[in-house]
Length: 134
Image 1 (cartoon, rainbow, N blue to C red):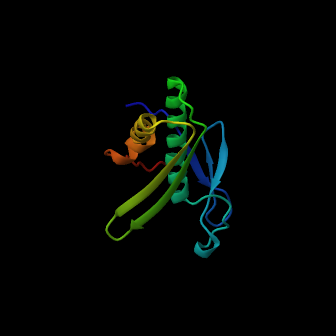
Image 2 (image 1 turned 90 degrees about the horizontal axis):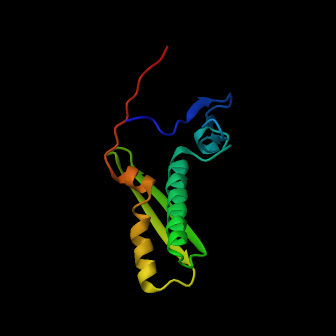
């Protein structure tokens, strides 16, 4: 399997602020002040939710556009809760479809929401290979 997307992260000089780059875009990740950070960017959990929300909205809009369906907007609300002791986590996702869609179109778009690549990644088996470089 070949790497498709590459993101590099490194500390930026602030206590916990990370500079993230994919070679085209730069952004920050951080933790809140209550955790010793500067709150200069979303925390890792929010970035994970953002990836799922972005993927869901784009996937639904692309599908509706291909079908010629009147989808004007997609609004996704995501919430994350975890039990770090047991390693269990739950993401709750609410999807609102805005447009003059009939019941069949809405039902199909609901199915398609679960077919977005990030949803598949998060609900499938994930192997993480970590190496330490010099």
